[in-house]
Length: 605
Image 1 (cartoon, rainbow, N blue to C red):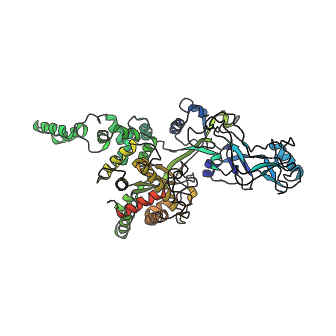
Image 2: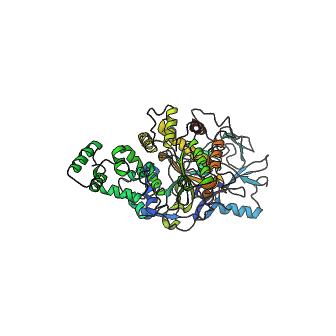
Image 3: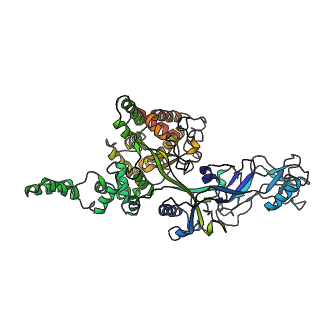
């Protein structure tokens, strides 16, 4: 059975249950592969520590990476070892349907070899796996409980009358007719009960994604002295903002500005005007005055200007690792092959310039500021544990992949680093603010400059850091996330060479940026995304907008309720593997309204 690395990372790590290609159900018990050496281990463990802080202390079954970094080993998954699970089978003879459970795989193999197949002990018909298991938030999982007949005193003649739901199905005795509803086993953990009731394991099918949810993290895998220094700098958020605002893309220059430490001691415009007059009256040379102004006068751009105008909340929000990673990706000295469409357009002439100008119009009509391409997008996707029944921190135990006498006695992190090709899209802050104003979520005047619009939006997002809200910040994040999915899905058009399942997103919604990368996790690239940027950008954007205007599941997809507040499904916005949040917080209706508005009010380049 062959599986891509993406499928292994998200579907076939230890303790996952899956349907084998031969039709039976299996559970992964071990992963083999080489140790990963070509990654920034410190960044990985720092990010893991941040992830673990989202869980309650008694929910985490994983060592603290800050105090026990040597307890971890990073492995690239290559070989999956599995066992048949569950060992519960039912007779395929509809007049029999007796259920038999084996407790040891060796015994099942012995009985199967003796009979030549898995055979019903009562009627000798063929048997098949019972397709249900029970699981609980604490991580426990068992085969479905088979009750003992209260009349016969054994389980030899019990069968499951399967009516399609656990509530309506029942266990029955083929011999005496005794019946009982499907009941679930109490969980011994004593946690996650409903009210005063004890906790119970619930029933699931192997295809139910809630049965096993991998917990993953994604980092930009850069090993660069400037980047490492920036990660340690207490004001790294200032450099990240300087990059996004367009003040200073060179992180080394931003670090130099921050190291001077004069951002908070600069004069106001009025103070400088008075000082400048005094210097000129004293006969100081103009070159010297210019140097003094650069060091102590009012700053228009860069680190000093940001410290002067951005709130502490904005700078603190920009300290986050994704914001800093975004800045590194847009530093030409770190990712030196990145090409932006704006740069290609600036050097185009003749017919190519005319086509590029038309493409800029399409970009503006979708609220896109710029699009870049790189053939060396340094991504690492890693999985450090899993949950059952619930994915969110606080609602389930985080289970480790560690196994006794495996992985050298350490806790494995399964990770795959790669330098792959990616398209990086940045959305227009003026368009987003204008749309929010149109929706009644922004009361101020929309700034005319891109920089001022970004600062205004940064204040909105920093004031409301939670994902999923319905205010201006929540809508902005949902909008960018939905647009990212729509752009990714539109690349699966038979022209780029990639299917949707082979692509993934890396997204930083608070700076309106997403990267769509090839999730093949190897260092071979086709250069297809370079061709998209140079020759197929208009077609891609038009295809994206057209796809969002409808869904194959309409009108059901467009219907919303208190239980389903946003419109998105697997036929319009959902991704198979490429979304780290598993398609949470998407809304096609919001995105469609945004693009209808931007087509009528395109931002001026």
